[in-house]
Image (cartoon, rainbow, N blue to C red; front, side):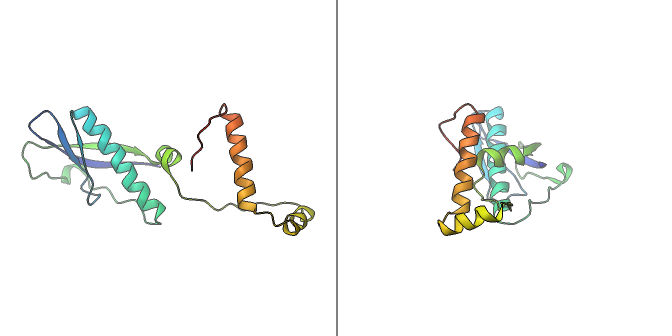
Length: 141
């Protein structure tokens, strides 16, 4: 899912910028340059939206750029693009539920041996991930 939001960039007088996203209450970040401020606000906004989504809330509705007003006359408004799928893949922590189908005999054996399906499936998928991704040592937790 890709989302676009307006942001406000306020110069701090030293070449840096304070960045806010009006549709995300409490989101404030800083960059020592305009480029850095843009990167920082994109990352902060992605994290803000991901937290909402993982809490079961919808992503905020974006205010149109032309309706975004800054109090500081020297501030600039701009749009940022958030790639939530890529961000969630990299930083998401929410577990997802998957249904699987296995043969009845295997289910009987697993029950008799107190096999934890979630743990077993996760271990198998992490091994497969390591093999296919070149043996990465660090897996997402």
